[in-house]
Amino acid sequence: SQELEQSPQSLIVQEGKNLTINCTSSKTLYGLYWYKQKYGEGLIFLMMLQKGGEEKSHEKITAKLDEKKQQSSLHITASQPSHAGIYLCGADKNDYKLSFGAGTTVTVRA
Amino acid sequence: EAGVAQSPRYKIIEKRQSVAFWCNPISGHATLYWYQQILGQGPKLLIQFQNNGVVDDSQLPKDRFSAERLKGVDSTLKIQPAKLEDSAVYLCASSLQGETEAFFGQGTRLTVV
Image (tube, rainbow over all chains, first blue to last red; front, side, top):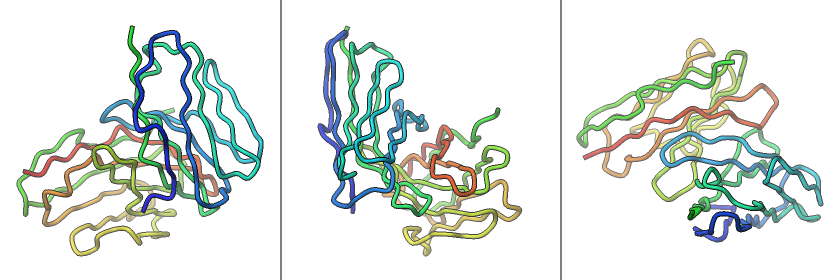
């Protein structure tokens, strides 16, 4: 069973607009990983969050982990066509392996 | 640095046939994972190796799936016999010992008809 819930399941955004994806766990996480996947391909690592309240940014992507370490959000500012893909959050329960949510499919319209 | 290599990229087989996938992890990565990703779902861990030993195979359907990593480097995942529901992308990933950040290969897309 999926321990991570991602929302929304999919979204369409106009190029230049912002978007936010959420990832919620029923249990406290040791770490939370964000990956991006192009359809039918491998996963590309984006960011890892480990501390409650932590926030990280890379280019136009910002990820946050709440204080309880049960919810994370991924925010993209001024989306571009290159941001299209499937975004996956992965939970680390301190056992050196990741369990993933179902993913959020992002479509960017020109 | 070379990434995780997987082959083949695509495979189409009939049900009840057998199939094998190959993975070469990043050099120096002691931990190797095989994930199954069914269309519309997130990757599901099938098996985790630490060097040539199995750490976790609790979600591997052992009646038809097998995996090995004999010399602690390359790994093969086999399905015999395949079922229609095995159609999925099979992803191999590797990580440094004691690290959770995994690096993924391009995956093998299996279609069982």
